[in-house]
Length: 118
Image (tube, rainbow, N blue to C red; front, side, top):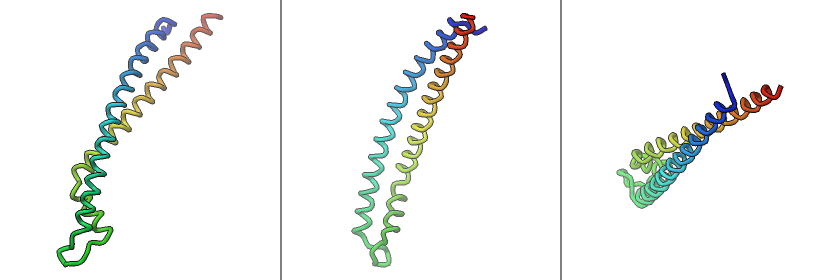
């Protein structure tokens, strides 16, 4: 049986979940942007290194070769950044899920109150 009290309890629980999800989102976004900055700086350093170096054949590297070499040299950071980005997306989706649950609980609460008035 759905009662106004049970709906209020659910909304209180969801309010705590919203706060937790927000804190978690701030944490994972901070980690992601830190990781992204490290990755971009490492890529830039690698590009500069390869731009000033000749290939084993004695020719200069092409722009595409420089990009590829820089990516390979920083593959661990690239994978870590991808994982961090996935975590941010998952955390955002969880926050959206909780907000949807809050909206549903509010709608149910309105329906229950309307039923009680009748």
